[in-house]
Image (cartoon, rainbow, N blue to C red):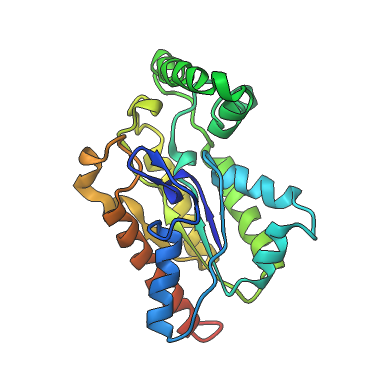
Amino acid sequence: MVLGDSLAFLAGTKALDPADLRLYPHVVGEILQTRTGRPWDVHVEVRAGWSILTLQRALRAARPDSDLVRRLAAAEAIVIGVGTMDATPAALPGRIGFGVRDSDTVRNRVTSKRRKLAWKTFARIYPALINASGARFPHTPPAQLRASWLALAAGLRAVAPGAAICGVVPAAHRCALYARSMRHHPAAVEVSTTVAAELGIPLVDLPALVGDEIERLPDGIHFTFELHHRVASAFADLVVAALTTPPGH
């Protein structure tokens, strides 16, 4: 089961069908099949703008008989492909800016005829507000990020106690939508890596994987197909290691 943000279904600047086999969630399945000698079914649950904070809230709000909970309960491995949004700056503080910084909300509140214009307007206003504030407002403050990580892990382990779980170190970016600001990235990385170590959840180091290629990404944040494959290979390494590690080790 892959829980992902837009990094899971965009290639460059193009949003693809999450079922596209070139995207990292499905490449993970292919690699696992090769390395374990058996087929893997991959279920993908993705939302643009999902963060650890909003994913934890979505899981908490999900009905026990929902597709999300049923698929998680049946999963042998769970990939938490979110966390990058938590490291970005927000245009407004706290809950005031919650809906504004949820790009799915912005896209879906308008009709299809007005959607493109609304998004272009949002893409101008949002970074302007970030710049005006000096990027002072974090999407997810460190204390809230820590609490969200702990609650998310507890929720996943309650639903799928036997599943191997892995996550990501928040990706770096040079994205214009977030005014190219990395002000809150170091704090989010520190919280995520510290909490994940406490929980025994291994992480794929996205900043290390992307490296200097960040400067060549079309929008400064979303992966090329080559990076999708590289990220998938790193996730597969973690899943295979977790599957072959005896409980308690």
